[in-house]
Length: 216
Image 1 (cartoon, rainbow, N blue to C red):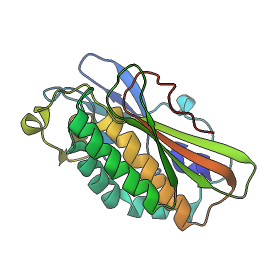
Image 2: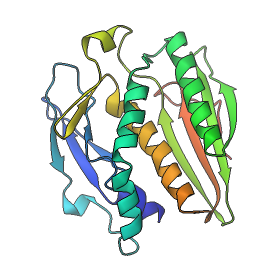
Image 3: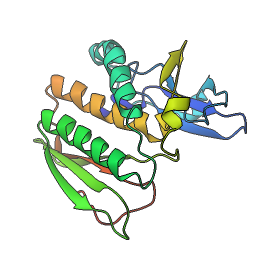
Image 4: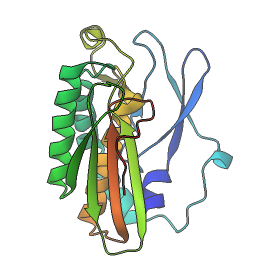
C-alpha cells in the first residue's frame, strides 16, 4: 500500500537551465505540479519516463487512488499554508512558526513528537513524529523546513496556482514534500493502515545533514 500511495505517479520538473529533478506525487492527490524554480523562471512539467518509475508491487488500489484524488484540494491548502511561512535558512521566527505548525499537525495524527536542537549553531529544531503500528518493518519519511529564499521573497512571489502548476518560494524544495508526507499519513490513517512497526516523520531545519535527530 505504501508503494502504491507514494510511487504511483512521478513527474520531472525542468527549469530553464535544463536541470531535471524528480518529485514523487501523492498518487493522484497532487497533480498540480510543485515548482521550485526562481520566481521569474518558467517550469515545464513532463511525465517521468516509464523506465524510471519502479513497477508497483501490487495492482493499483482503486479506493486508495480515489481517496488520494479527493485529497487534492486539502493538500493544496496545506501547501499554501506552508509556503506562506517564510523559512529561509537562519530565519529564527520562520523556523519557529513552521515547527509549531508541523508539531500540531503530527500530534493531530496521533504521533508522539519530540524536538532535538540542531548542531553547529543552526537555527531551528529537528522534529521527529512517531506513529506505532502492529507490523515488523519501519518507515522513515524525511523532509527539511528551510528554503534558499531570503525573507521578503514571498511578497514579491506569493503562492499561486496557474493551470496545472503551483508557484511559490520553496514550494518543491521542500514544502511540497512536507505536504505530501502529512496527507499520505492522513490517508493511511483513514484506511486503518497499521502494518508498520513504527512510522517516523522527521522534519529538519536545514537541507544539510544534521545528526542531532535520530529516528529510531
